[in-house]
Image (cartoon, rainbow, N blue to C red; front, side, top):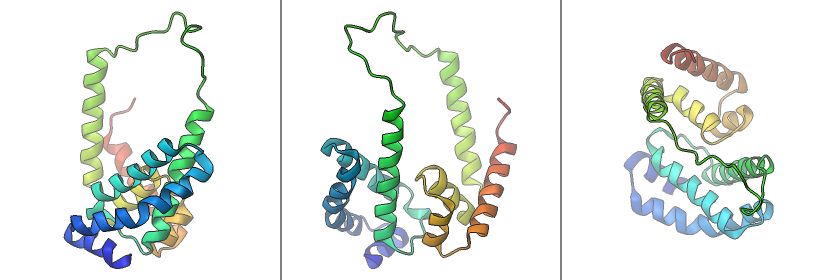
Length: 175
Protein backbone atom coordinates (compact mmCIF):
# COMPACT_ATOMS: atom_id res chain seq x y z
CA UNK A 1 0.00 0.00 0.00
CA UNK A 2 2.95 2.31 0.68
CA UNK A 3 4.12 1.81 -2.91
CA UNK A 4 0.70 2.76 -4.28
CA UNK A 5 0.59 5.88 -2.13
CA UNK A 6 4.10 6.86 -3.24
CA UNK A 7 3.06 6.47 -6.89
CA UNK A 8 -0.04 8.58 -6.27
CA UNK A 9 1.76 11.36 -4.40
CA UNK A 10 5.00 11.53 -6.37
CA UNK A 11 3.86 10.63 -9.89
CA UNK A 12 0.16 11.59 -9.99
CA UNK A 13 -0.47 7.95 -10.90
CA UNK A 14 -4.24 7.65 -11.39
CA UNK A 15 -4.20 3.87 -12.02
CA UNK A 16 -2.42 3.46 -8.66
CA UNK A 17 -5.13 5.60 -7.07
CA UNK A 18 -7.83 3.42 -8.65
CA UNK A 19 -6.10 0.29 -7.37
CA UNK A 20 -5.87 1.74 -3.84
CA UNK A 21 -9.55 2.69 -4.05
CA UNK A 22 -10.61 -0.79 -5.21
CA UNK A 23 -8.52 -2.45 -2.51
CA UNK A 24 -9.61 -0.29 0.42
CA UNK A 25 -13.12 0.98 -0.42
CA UNK A 26 -15.10 -2.01 0.86
CA UNK A 27 -13.14 -2.49 4.13
CA UNK A 28 -13.35 1.23 4.85
CA UNK A 29 -17.11 1.25 4.20
CA UNK A 30 -17.58 -1.71 6.56
CA UNK A 31 -15.49 0.05 9.20
CA UNK A 32 -17.47 3.28 8.82
CA UNK A 33 -20.80 1.40 8.98
CA UNK A 34 -19.98 0.31 12.53
CA UNK A 35 -20.59 3.80 13.85
CA UNK A 36 -22.71 5.69 11.26
CA UNK A 37 -25.15 2.77 10.81
CA UNK A 38 -26.17 3.82 7.28
CA UNK A 39 -24.65 2.24 4.18
CA UNK A 40 -25.18 5.31 1.95
CA UNK A 41 -23.62 7.65 4.51
CA UNK A 42 -20.63 5.35 4.99
CA UNK A 43 -20.08 5.15 1.24
CA UNK A 44 -20.28 8.92 0.91
CA UNK A 45 -17.83 9.51 3.76
CA UNK A 46 -15.32 7.00 2.37
CA UNK A 47 -15.65 8.54 -1.08
CA UNK A 48 -14.97 11.98 0.42
CA UNK A 49 -11.78 10.68 2.00
CA UNK A 50 -10.57 9.31 -1.33
CA UNK A 51 -11.58 12.52 -3.10
CA UNK A 52 -9.49 14.55 -0.63
CA UNK A 53 -6.52 12.24 -1.10
CA UNK A 54 -6.61 12.75 -4.85
CA UNK A 55 -7.28 16.49 -4.53
CA UNK A 56 -4.44 17.03 -2.04
CA UNK A 57 -2.02 14.40 -3.36
CA UNK A 58 0.71 16.91 -4.15
CA UNK A 59 1.02 17.97 -0.52
CA UNK A 60 0.44 14.68 1.27
CA UNK A 61 3.16 13.02 3.31
CA UNK A 62 1.78 9.75 4.64
CA UNK A 63 3.92 7.33 6.60
CA UNK A 64 1.26 4.63 6.94
CA UNK A 65 -1.45 4.78 4.24
CA UNK A 66 -3.68 2.19 5.89
CA UNK A 67 -3.62 3.99 9.25
CA UNK A 68 -4.21 7.30 7.50
CA UNK A 69 -7.23 5.96 5.60
CA UNK A 70 -8.86 4.41 8.65
CA UNK A 71 -8.17 7.50 10.80
CA UNK A 72 -9.59 9.78 8.11
CA UNK A 73 -12.74 7.68 7.73
CA UNK A 74 -13.17 7.50 11.51
CA UNK A 75 -12.82 11.27 11.83
CA UNK A 76 -15.27 11.89 8.96
CA UNK A 77 -17.72 9.53 10.63
CA UNK A 78 -17.43 11.27 13.98
CA UNK A 79 -17.84 14.67 12.31
CA UNK A 80 -20.99 13.41 10.60
CA UNK A 81 -22.39 12.08 13.87
CA UNK A 82 -21.66 15.40 15.61
CA UNK A 83 -23.49 17.29 12.84
CA UNK A 84 -26.62 15.14 12.93
CA UNK A 85 -26.69 15.14 16.73
CA UNK A 86 -27.00 18.94 16.64
CA UNK A 87 -29.67 18.90 13.93
CA UNK A 88 -33.30 19.40 14.82
CA UNK A 89 -35.64 17.23 12.79
CA UNK A 90 -39.32 17.83 12.08
CA UNK A 91 -41.97 16.72 9.64
CA UNK A 92 -42.60 18.96 6.65
CA UNK A 93 -46.25 19.23 7.62
CA UNK A 94 -45.21 20.69 10.98
CA UNK A 95 -42.73 23.17 9.51
CA UNK A 96 -44.26 26.62 9.24
CA UNK A 97 -42.65 29.94 8.49
CA UNK A 98 -39.43 28.33 7.30
CA UNK A 99 -37.34 30.86 5.39
CA UNK A 100 -36.45 29.93 1.83
CA UNK A 101 -32.73 30.44 2.47
CA UNK A 102 -32.11 32.79 -0.43
CA UNK A 103 -28.65 34.23 -0.06
CA UNK A 104 -28.15 37.87 -0.74
CA UNK A 105 -25.91 38.45 -3.78
CA UNK A 106 -23.77 40.85 -1.72
CA UNK A 107 -23.24 38.14 0.90
CA UNK A 108 -22.29 35.66 -1.80
CA UNK A 109 -19.75 38.10 -3.27
CA UNK A 110 -18.19 38.72 0.14
CA UNK A 111 -18.04 34.98 0.78
CA UNK A 112 -16.37 34.31 -2.58
CA UNK A 113 -13.78 37.05 -2.01
CA UNK A 114 -13.04 35.75 1.48
CA UNK A 115 -12.71 32.18 0.20
CA UNK A 116 -10.34 33.28 -2.59
CA UNK A 117 -8.19 35.21 -0.13
CA UNK A 118 -8.08 32.20 2.21
CA UNK A 119 -7.06 29.81 -0.58
CA UNK A 120 -4.32 32.19 -1.78
CA UNK A 121 -3.02 32.61 1.77
CA UNK A 122 -2.96 28.84 2.32
CA UNK A 123 -1.05 28.38 -0.94
CA UNK A 124 1.67 30.71 0.38
CA UNK A 125 2.23 28.58 3.48
CA UNK A 126 5.34 26.37 3.52
CA UNK A 127 4.61 22.82 2.34
CA UNK A 128 4.81 21.08 5.72
CA UNK A 129 2.90 23.85 7.46
CA UNK A 130 0.15 23.69 4.81
CA UNK A 131 -0.02 19.88 5.11
CA UNK A 132 -0.31 19.99 8.90
CA UNK A 133 -3.01 22.67 8.66
CA UNK A 134 -4.95 20.63 6.09
CA UNK A 135 -4.74 17.44 8.15
CA UNK A 136 -6.00 19.30 11.20
CA UNK A 137 -8.72 21.46 9.68
CA UNK A 138 -9.83 19.54 6.59
CA UNK A 139 -9.31 15.95 7.75
CA UNK A 140 -10.11 16.60 11.41
CA UNK A 141 -7.03 14.83 12.79
CA UNK A 142 -5.78 15.63 16.28
CA UNK A 143 -2.26 16.98 16.78
CA UNK A 144 -0.94 13.70 18.15
CA UNK A 145 -2.43 11.81 15.17
CA UNK A 146 -0.76 14.23 12.77
CA UNK A 147 2.52 13.88 14.65
CA UNK A 148 2.37 10.09 14.45
CA UNK A 149 1.36 10.18 10.79
CA UNK A 150 4.22 12.51 9.79
CA UNK A 151 6.80 11.18 12.28
CA UNK A 152 7.03 14.55 14.04
CA UNK A 153 6.77 15.61 17.64
CA UNK A 154 3.46 16.96 18.89
CA UNK A 155 5.27 20.20 19.76
CA UNK A 156 6.38 20.58 16.11
CA UNK A 157 2.79 20.11 14.97
CA UNK A 158 1.61 22.71 17.50
CA UNK A 159 4.27 25.17 16.35
CA UNK A 160 3.42 24.67 12.67
CA UNK A 161 -0.31 25.11 13.36
CA UNK A 162 0.42 28.30 15.30
CA UNK A 163 2.43 29.64 12.37
CA UNK A 164 -0.30 28.72 9.89
CA UNK A 165 -3.02 30.37 11.97
CA UNK A 166 -0.92 33.50 12.52
CA UNK A 167 -0.25 33.74 8.78
CA UNK A 168 -3.92 33.26 7.90
CA UNK A 169 -5.08 35.78 10.51
CA UNK A 170 -2.74 38.41 9.12
CA UNK A 171 -3.88 37.73 5.54
CA UNK A 172 -7.62 37.81 6.22
CA UNK A 173 -9.60 40.97 6.97
CA UNK A 174 -11.10 41.25 10.45
CA UNK A 175 -14.74 40.19 10.66
